[in-house]
Length: 59
Image (cartoon, rainbow, N blue to C red):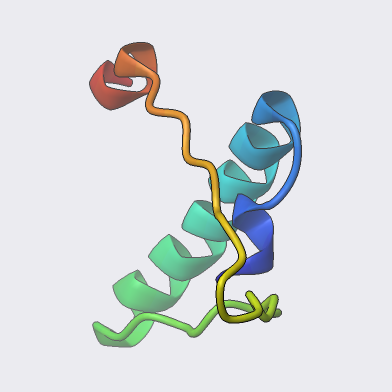
């Protein structure tokens, strides 16, 4: 799981915005996306909770 998706809602939002800007700059340069800087290992059987915020969808 990309590390920028781990943490509180505000932390994830802030880190995801920065990661999106980084990837967007790379895409504009050569049309490719960068891999996440860091990945977190999710052990087998561990539960990952995801919260969907409709407000983020419209931004």
